[in-house]
Each structure stands twice: as C-alpha cells, then as structure tokens.
Length: 118
Image 1 (cartoon, helix red, strand yellow):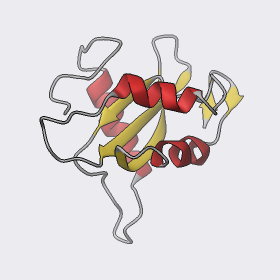
Image 2 (cartoon, one colour):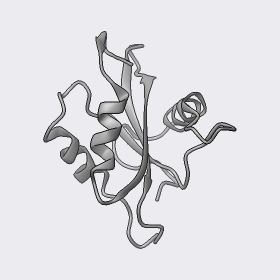
Image 3 (cartoon, one colour):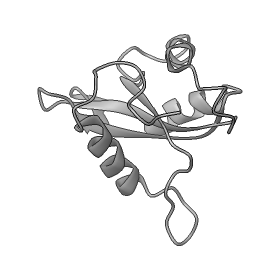
Image 4 (cartoon, helix red, strand yellow):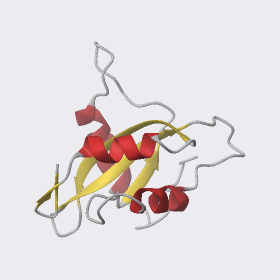
C-alpha cells in the first residue's frame, strides 16, 4: 500500500496490531485523505465484546508508534464487530476498504472514534 507516495506493508502494521492484547483481528487498508494521498487506516475487531470496555484507539496508535515508522502508523483506527471475509475465509480487503471509506466520508470528526463505534 502506498502511504503518501511511500510504500508500506499493511501486513507489518497488522502484525503489530495483533500483538496488542485488546485486538482480536486487524486489517489495514489505504484510504485517500483530503489531498488525495493514500493513508493507512486500521480496521480492528476488539478482543472484548463488552460495550463497557471500549477499545482505546489512542493507546493502540501509541503502541504502533513504538516500533513502526511514522508513515506506516494508522491515521485512523476503526472498530468492527467482524471483518468481512471472502468465500474462502480470507479477509475481503476491498470490502473493508469500501466500508472504511464510507465511514470516514460520512461527515465524521477527523480524530477519535466515529459515531456508532464501540
């Protein structure tokens, strides 16, 4: 995936996210920003399904910054109850990217959880 013209491996970011105990599943996709540059967006399934135990996206971002290059760190972290999969059980990255883009362009704030995120 390109991040502002620099190549970044989504798998590297996903592997880092999966090292965090609060993350059950992760998929990183490129979503264009307002300047048209692709930026990494992490789509994660929290390990806890308890709505009283929301995922701390700021802590997760800080966790990524401990070992990843700044340009590969997710610009946003979106929470999902489940990631869409293909018929063979693999994460459907195209569908995840479309859902992330739809959620980010729905007139939501630039930082923090989106409305309806747990």
